[in-house]
Structure formats: C-alpha cells, structure tokens
Image 1 (cartoon, rainbow, N blue to C red):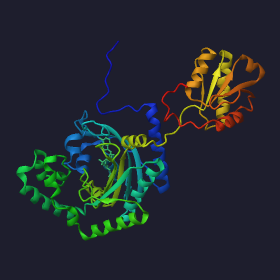
Image 2 (image 1 turned 135 degrees about the vertical axis):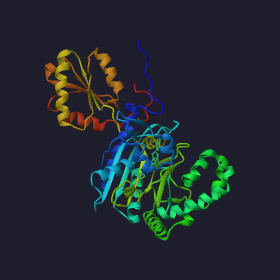
Image 3 (image 1 turned 90 degrees about the horizontal axis):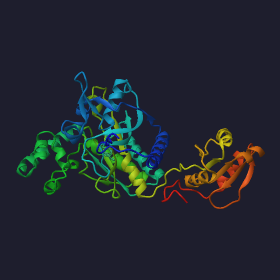
Image 4 (image 1 turned 45 degrees about the vertical axis):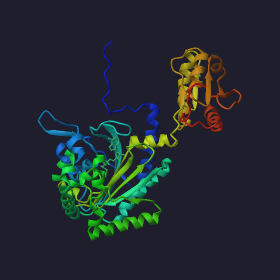
Amino acid sequence: MSEIIEPLRGMNDVLPDEARWWQRLEAAARAVFAQYGYREIRVPVLERTQLFKRAIGEYTDIVEKEMFTFEDRDGLSLALRPEGTAGIVRAAISNGLLHNQRHRLFTFGPMFRGERPQKGRYRQFHQIDAEAFGYEGPDIDAELILLSARLWRVLGISRVRLEINSLGTAEARAAYREVLRAYFTAHESVLDADSRRRLGGNPLRILDSKNPDLAALIAAAPLLTDHLDAASREHFDGLRARLDAAGVGYTVNPRLVRGLDYYSRTVFEWVTDALGSQNAVCSGGRYDGLVPQLGGTPTPAIGWALGMERIVMLMQELGCAAPAELPQVYFVLAGPVAAAAGLQLAERVRDALPALRLETDIGGGSFKAQFKRADKSGAAVAVVLGEDELARGVAAVKPLRGGGAQEDCGFEALPACLARLVAAAPVDDGGATRQDPGR
Ligand code: HAM
C-alpha cells in the first residue's frame, strides 16, 4: 500500500457531523442578510499580492508574516486572500460598482493566514463577511452591529459582548502616530525587536503587542481617544446613541486598534469568554480611505467579518440547536423485486412530501440486517416492502420510536400515512445530543 498523504497543518476537513452546524450558521446568516437587504458577492480566493500589501498594510502581521504568497509561471506575485475586504473593494472598483451607488454586500468563504495553529486559530479558516459602500453617517455602523446582534439571537448565541472604539480620521491618526512614536522612542531601550521595527513603520501596531514585558509601557501610552478630531468624535457619539437606543450593550475599549491598517473612525469586535485565548468572534470597522487608496472613486465604507470556526465552536459550546439531518423514514426492501419497486415508491413519496428525509436501504441483505440499519439510522418510521406486501399492493409501516403498532398502508395513501406518523413521532434533536447512534 502507498504511504498516506498527511493533511496540511492548520487546514481542517469539515466532516458531515460537523458540516450541519456550518449549514445552520450559513442558512441563518443568509436569512438575516436578506432581512436587511444585503446581497451576495463572490470574489476570487487568489489576488495579486500587491492588493493585500496596499490594503492591509506593509507593517501588519498579516502581510509581514502570514500571507501565503508565491510567484506564478510568469513571475507575477500572487497571494491566497488572508481576508475578504480587500478583494471585495477591488471587485467593486474593477466592476464600476462605486459610481454614485450604494451597496450592501456579503460573502462567505475560506481565508488563509500562515499563523501558528491552535484552538480557534487555523491557516485555512472561513469568514462570513458583510460590507457596505457609500454610506457616510453612523446609521450604517449601527445597522451592521444590529445585524450581527440579530444573528447571535437567531443562532441562540449568548456569552458575546461588544467592544467599540474610534480611530478617528487618517489625519488624526497620523498626528496620534507621531505622539506615539515620540512616546515609544523615549522608551526605545525596553522595546523588543518587533516593536522597534514597528516604531519606524506604524507605532500603532506596538499597542497590539502580546509581549507581557511591554504591558505596563503600553498601558501608560497616550490614548487615541484623546486625539480624535471633532467630526470623528461626533460620528462616534452618533453610533453610541444609536446603540443605546437599540438596547445593544457595549464597552468602549480605547485600546482596540485592530490588526489591519485600513480602518478609520469606528472599529468594533464581538468577543467571548467561552473559547479561550482566540476570543474575537466577529470584528470590523469603517475604512473610508481604502477605496481611493486602491484607485477607486472616494467612497465611505464599513464592514465586519465573523470567524465561522469560532462561531460554530461557540454554538456547540453553548448547546445551540443544529439542524436535524437524520432520515425520518427508512425503507426496508426484502428481495430484488421489492428493491426495484421500493425505489419507485420512494420517488413517489418524495414527490408528494418534498421536505421529508427518506432513506431507502441500498444493497439489500437479510430482513434483520436491514431493520438493524433502519433502527441505527435514527429514522422515526420504517416502511417494509416484501414480496407479500407487493402482492397485496400495500407497504407495512412501523413506527420505530415511541411505540405504535405496525399497519398496512396502500401505495396511494402512503405519503399521508407517513406524514401523520412522522409528525406524531417524538422529536429528535438531529443527533445533537445522541451519544450512540444505535438504540
Ligand atoms: P479580522 O479581525 O482579521 O478582520 O478577522 C475577522 C474574524 O475572523 C476574527 O474576528 C476571527 O473571528 C476570524 N479569524 C481571523 N483569523 C483567524 C484564524 N487564523 N483562524 C480562525 N479564525 C480567524 C478581517 O478579516 C476584516 N476583513 C474584517 C472586516 C470586514 N473589516 C471590515 N470589513
């Protein structure tokens, strides 16, 4: 036998038992986006490296250390997207979507960052991403946050809390950057190598440092909130007033600076205490300067992205509901003639009951073996078809859960009979809490 090919570190397979949680999240997000008038956009996973360098920033961890970058056969530098915003902005510009137009968009998909994998942090991970273009005032900031809060409610997610901050305009931040540069330069001797390098590039990034030796120095650093321009302050107050009016709780975290350079004014993050150190489940902010920075007509913009792996883990941790996908009805087909007839009968039932989950036994085997499989499948009702039933033009219908006697049912009446029995069966949670599939 050949050697097994190992999967890549930090890149996960999503197996069927797990996938139903993802489907739940995706379906809920689609429904909520539709409620708010957000429309889907799909963009490539691969872009020119230059796009991410310019959008996310040369001195960010993502661009400096984490991008999967390679040259194609023509020597063009390409990168697997580390996030969704840059590609969506590129697409909006490339396709002329931003000329005096407004757009509310969303996308789902895989992102790639070469980080050190750990619980909640992967090299291929997935985001659900919302972006709004052309809206200037704080209403859209509030709407995007309300939309995310609604998604948590729909999914049954608790134990998340919202942190918000304002980074001001690019000018205010440039001024603050110099204040910070002066502050950290005065303490250069205690900085680590990473921070010293950032001192020349973007000293704001030093505030993100996880080095415990720098914690006290960072805690005493001047606050951006104290250097906000008047218009940004007003914008931030507007957002706060709208969140207050909507009853969305939040804390202002003046240290929230985010790991991407394109933000201006509003930034926010939903964090949880239920997942350990990778506690950010949904993060975003305003990026009014990014469209012109990438060559497009100046357009205000704001968005967020949630980490699907983290939300799925949170749903599981909190015992939220996942959709049932076990069969509700299982066809036991005794003998080759019944197998062929059963396949057709099952088609007729599916025509009549499109929402019913119906599995037929394929491959035959003894009656006993098939019944065992029916039982193991989790189905509520077994339909038995053998030579005898076929001769009489009926199927034997047997509830598998909660008792109930076996009865014969004519082929025409079978859909109605199954609908009645499935509705009467004890509710199955879709296996969410079931330890052993065999009963
Ligand atoms: P981000 O904070 O880099 O922002 O990522 C957003 C979310 O993706 C995080 O809150 C986290 O839940 C998840 N995430 C990030 N990295 C990983 C990883 N290695 N493994 C698992 N999950 C991860 C952005 O990407 C921005 N594009 C968000 C945005 C949209 N801002 C404006 N519009």
